[in-house]
Length: 191
Image (tube, rainbow, N blue to C red):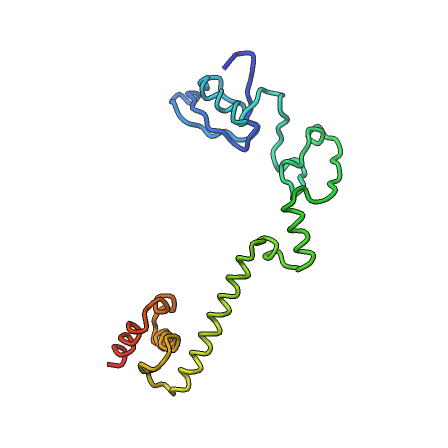
């Protein structure tokens, strides 16, 4: 590193190897920190090329909490003028297509979870969970009709599963088992 230039971390953080502590060690420097003078030229080039550091004064650096940011855009919403103390410009709406889609779905549906999952995966998971709950409820009704007796080989897999759950088995474990295995487990609980 040259004597005339000082370099400052402009990313959230950067790792450098230094001997400033008397021992060669890797140090984590946070945004705004100046690089020690003994940073190797190869590492300095990597940090400059990657946008982790810049020469002092080239890029305005402010801690995240010191400058108000548009929560929809994050740090990108802070301008150099704002860092110099100028009044921030009023944002005129969402800054990206995703933000616009989220705002649209939230206003229409009133649910942020639907907006966050545009592919419909959450809806599919919700439907699957509702189906499982309905099957379990129906099986529990059939099991109740047996008045405490163990189900036999004519019972459905769901009824066998609910019987075993009632006997202390884990639902997720027994739900994966084959019907023949479930019948064996039921018979072993009777003896």
